[in-house]
Length: 88
Image 1 (cartoon, rainbow, N blue to C red):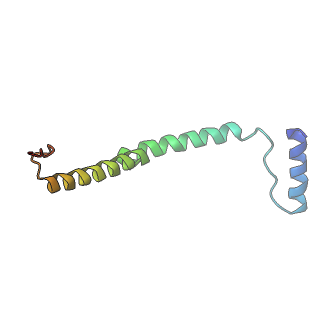
Image 2: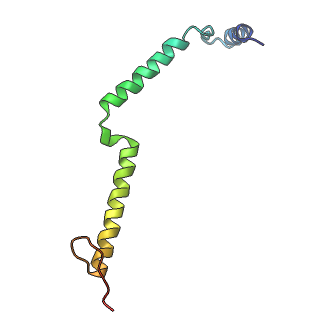
Image 3: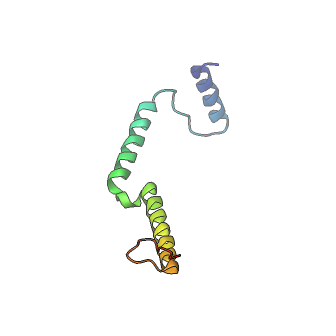
């Protein structure tokens, strides 16, 4: 079954169910793709870079790593972020 035959079948089903007719194949494809592209461009411009998912993940990993390193440095008695040396 090609796209034209499928469209005719969809038209028949829509008429039987008293629904709106579906658009013909290929008529809204380019316009829909362009609208989606414009929407993604709009979201990229309006959304602050810090609100993007990779930035949020990076920020969470940094804060977790900083918390773990500061906790470890306090436990070992290091200074200025350098690891503590054990005297033996």
